[in-house]
Image 1 (cartoon, rainbow, N blue to C red):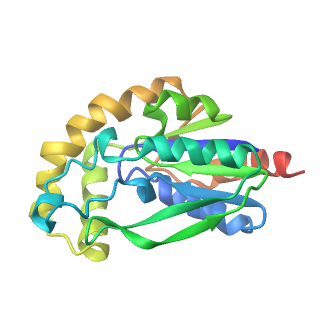
Image 2 (cartoon, rainbow, N blue to C red; image 1 turned 60 degrees about the vertical axis):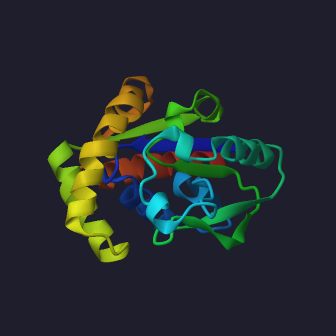
Length: 202
C-alpha cells in the first residue's frame, strides 16, 4: 500500500485538494482518511468544557489509534474508523468500515508532526497559505458549516490555532516531498499527484 500524507495549516487548501483527487478516483481504488475523525471522545466532559479543549494540540487526537489503523491497512486488514461530530465535540456511535486499497491518502494539520505516522508515509505534501487568508477561510467554514460565531473563531486562532501552528505544523514544511501554494490554482498539482496515484494503481 502506497501512503500519501497531506498536511498544512488549517484552511490552507488540503481538503479542497483531496476532494479534487477523490473526484478522479473511485472508492474501489483509493482510501482517504482524515485526522479529524480521530479526535478523542469527550463524553466525560460538559459541552462548555469540551469547547475549552485545545483541538489544535496533538494531545487532543488519538494518534495511537490512527497509527494502529495505518499498520492494519498496510497488513491488508480492514479497520473501523471513528466518526466525529464538531457540533457536540464528541465521537458518534457509528464507525466507518475501511478495507485496504493500493493507495491511501491521509490528511490533517498534525499528522506529519507525529514521527511514527510520517515514517510510514511514502510521499508527503505540505499546503502553505498566508495567515490572513486561512483566518478568512476558517471563518466562512466554521460559521456556515459548524454553527460557530466569528468571535469564537477569532479567539481560537489567537489562543490555540496560531501558537499550535507555529509549534507543530509550520516546522513540517521543511521536511516534505512537495510544498503546494494553497492560494494558487491547484490543477497542475492535482495532475501531478493523480499521475503518482495511477502509477501505484497499475
